[in-house]
Image (cartoon, rainbow, N blue to C red):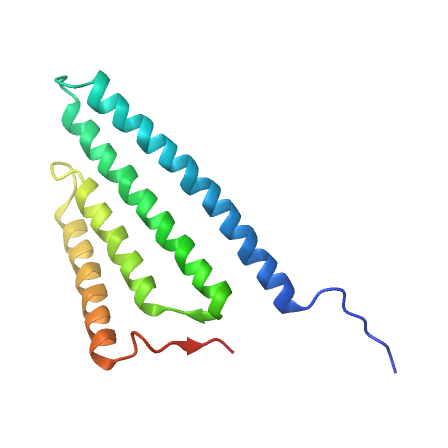
Length: 146
């Protein structure tokens, strides 16, 4: 009989990877917040009244939504490590935020119409999924991972 000694279990490796992802995502969110603050100062103080002010505002919205998605993903990872559950409601909300970011930042003059239909279909699918999840009552109930 062969004696198998494991140094690390699969659960320990998985937990380490999730914590590493949380640390890296936290660094990205902090750097993104610093960048957002700098862009706000640059847009409102240095570029006030210039021709590209409107594009600067759109860029601010894009970075703002990017930071918001990062924070939501960080919260999702935190809940996963704490409770070992996948919260479908939070994942759908993050997807909706990403779709809203795309809708706000899209260039309406150069984007073909089939892209708009695709984005509309994605938003409707996410919205219907969220509605059905809330209606079923599973939003507060969580499904434990095996």
